Image (cartoon, rainbow, N blue to C red; front, side, top):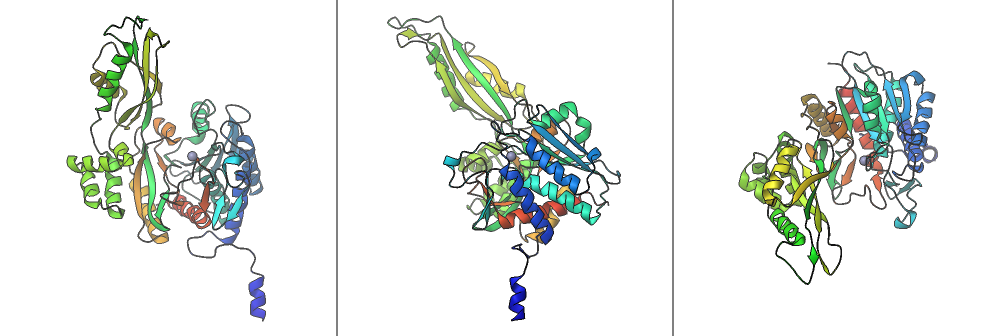
Amino acid sequence: MLRFLSLAIVPFACIAAANMPPEADQKLARDIFKEVIEIKSGFTTGATTPVVEAIAKRLRAAGFSSADMFLGGAIPTKANLVVRYRGTGKRKPLLLLAHTDVVEAKREDWSVDPFTFLEKDGYYYGRGSSDDKAQVTAWVENLIRYRREGFQPDRDLIVALTADEEGGGPYNGVDWLIKNHRDLIDAEFALNEGGRGSMVNGKRLSNDMQAAEKWYLDVRLEVRNKGGHSSLPVPDNAIYRLAGALVRLSQFAFPLKVTDVTRAYFAGMAKIDTTGAKADLQAASTGDPEAMKRIAAASPAWNSMLRTTCVATMLEGGHATNALPQLAAANVNCRVQPDDSLDYVLGELKKTVADDQVKISISNKEENSPASALRPDLMRAMAKISDSMWPGVIVLPTMSTGATDGRSLRATGIPTYGVQGFFYERDDVRAHGRDERIGVRSFYEGQEFLYELVKTLSAGQ
Ligand SMILES: [Zn+2]
């Protein structure tokens, strides 16, 4: 009887198992997670300042000094928080980055309230639960835990929680910090979002580490013509000229190639592939042209990792149904491999268009940033911790075909790695979408993984 009674007073539903933070840290992480998810920090309608103020309050209560914290940003509603956990200073700091803004979410689009933290069927629901408030929570809770445990790293640990990653813009916290307080975030390297764990039907396969991103470029193709009455057509027609250029573009493709990062990616994928493409993935990782061709044809994602892409996305032209067009223009969106230059891409487009009357100009260009070298210390630490937490899971270097704040850090000389250890079903990614969620177990395991990883990378050698 007594035994049953003692079972009944087990304090709360923490997950007691290997790979999990201690109970008190699970509880604190859950509290922080709930608090930050329920603060509306939508990219366009919300504010990030209340998020970082709430966190600063918790850090102060945990004994962090105000002198080691910086709060500030481009405008009063878009503040960032930078907090420094002091180490012995033997090595250059490690920067731990996460963004506090979220993609907008409307109640009517969701089956639950996006800004009410909800635990249901083994998941935590809420806007930002996977992008990127789980990582915000893990960095903050782990910092508090290190302090409580008296951990002394051999380098400063800098946590930066920043505004407006989603869509960038003038209030982007990372850009603002680089411009105004570069010293506060200067580090040997940084860990950020962009790499996650991948599982299929609950089976954990790979712990991804994003080490490169393609860069974004919009090019305008434009044809101008004196026009005239449409009852008197002439061969020289702006719409036809543009159409010809676009057809030639549709028949063109940039050459296939592998980089250090994608070589490692395809070699890793060859080990865990379930689609029957093992041999081709392995051969593609060595740059085998025929294998790369087959891999590119098999998947738009693999194609995009193997080459720079440029594709027509918008059209405009003509001014009246009864007039010859004076203008025809198209937007061509390029996603460029990190080591391809602007001149190279524009040169190839010019050759492909092959018409001097089609004017080619840049309408939008993001800064290019180099791939980050696959650091042996990070690769080793990730492999060791992943393997002890999830035997058989491989560490998979990746190149994103979209963008994160890592781009700006890499461009300013701080190599950046997207690492989370939060696992998601590969075919059920809900970041930016409806009913965003993270598995309860995945959440705490990721927190524990990041705790061990940062400790390993700063524990002296
Ligand atoms: Zn994000």
